[in-house]
Amino acid sequence: MTRKLNGHITLRGYLLLLLFLAAFWLLWKNTNRRKKMIMKNDLYKKVYSYLIENGVPVRMSQILVAQAAHETSNFTSRIFIENHNLFGMKLAKIRKTLATGERYGHAIFRNIEDSVLDIIIYLTFSDIPKNFIDSDSYVEAIKDKGYFTASLREYQKGTEYFLNLYFGG
Image 1 (tube, rainbow, N blue to C red):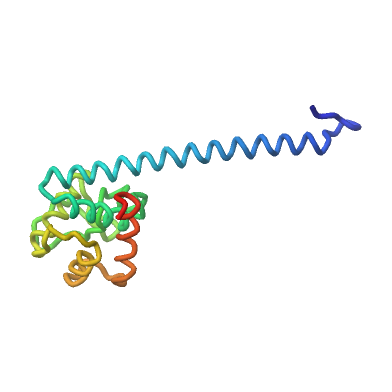
Image 2 (image 1 turned 45 degrees about the vertical axis):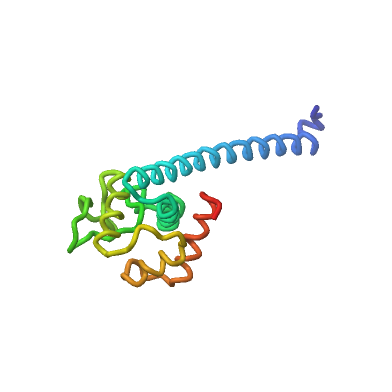
């Protein structure tokens, strides 16, 4: 109960109001975080399922999901959201591609399914095996093909982080 002294709310009243607002803010923030995490979890499951459906072995599918999460900053990047580009692919010039154009220097796909199929096309075209069981070896293989320009160790650590997050290693 708050008391007014000469028309002013006491310190205890302010503290109770502040506590209520802080609790409300934390509840709202956690609810938003949960919604975003559920969305991300649904995305990784969808990508994983689509890879499996298209003949990519289980462990390689897990590695590719981890790569997609790394490339998209856990499915939040502008390139992913606006271009449906899971793997940071540039517009292919010499191989078949499912990309429909280019924006921000990256390929645009109609949907994430086309992005998944395009990474499979890339792996086949580049003679990269689809039977890796070790993410570090896979990352070395795509680095050797010029897939990315970041440091090898940085890319390995990022892919490994998401592999552990989503699949426990």
